[in-house]
Amino acid sequence: MTVRALARVNLAAIERNVARLRRELDGAELCAVVKADGYGHGAAPAARAALAGGATWLAVAAAGEATALRAAGIEGRLLVMGALTPDELDAALAADADVVAWREDMVEAVGERGGGRIHVKLDTGMGRLGTRNAEQATRVAELAASTAGVQLAGLMTHFATADERGDAFLGEQLGRFESWARPLREHFPGAIVHAANSAAVLRERATHFDLVRPGVAIYGLDPFQQDAAAQDLEPALELASYVAELKHCGPGESAGYGRRFVAERDTVLATVPIGYGDGVRRALTDRADVVIAGRRFPIAGTVSMDNITVDVGSDGGGIGRGEEVVLIGPGVPAEEMAQRLQTINYEITCGLTPRVVRRYHRDGEPA
Image: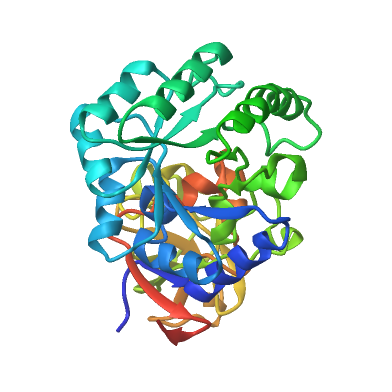
């Protein structure tokens, strides 16, 4: 059945990407990050594929995401990395998820609820969650280790510039983290040490410690925003629609809101029923290409909520109604769309809305 907006997700590619990342590791475990609905790919299917590829942990940002994974039958170690309200803490612990703390009152709240597993976060330079004060982080870790029912499960941080090759700040953060975590680990050998995101996994082995937390790379997206193939990664997602109509457009005739496209010559426009209501950003107006029958054609005029128009040339490009249109996939990678929007590939796939149908396969075979 033809679908107006379709994301095809290759679960075998996710498995292979996880296996590829594991080859970078020397004994460290891999925690697959499946927050934000698996970066738009679908959290539960992505989680299963990641586990099949060798991941031993999963991570999310919100308690509701942990609850949804458990409801889908996903088992194993699960880390909720984000801030939690009291109700969200209840939900995270009910999902048997590990949680993150950086203040004493957070440890006390877990203890009051009967206990749970805590990872203490030192803010080494990201400037968001965690404490910048290493002494406070140590006190939190000691409290977690001594509170009845609470387990000090991990010591963690997060890198701000790992995806910027050649920057010095990664090394600064790593030094701060090591000077805090390594001595503390000697006192609490049961706590695992973890810091590396996708870029750090690929860039610096010294960041691997006991566990790594790749996200974007497991979906075959380049954390350095250039070329997934150069990192030996396979993009797992293709975004497609179809040609709903073909229309001659003569000189002076226009298409779309605001008449952003006015024909200077005879041409044919293909109307494709996908738009910003599906996650194809309006800022791509006149700034992106699609692939039809193996050929690239430009978006012509304003991206609207439900439709785009594509200039397929004066001869119609040999295109017929019903022909598939690829917006993300071979020949039009997510990194290219991100560059056109001056953003990152994360935002491209996370921005796909629920109106886009997800279909799962394994190298073309139904999953």
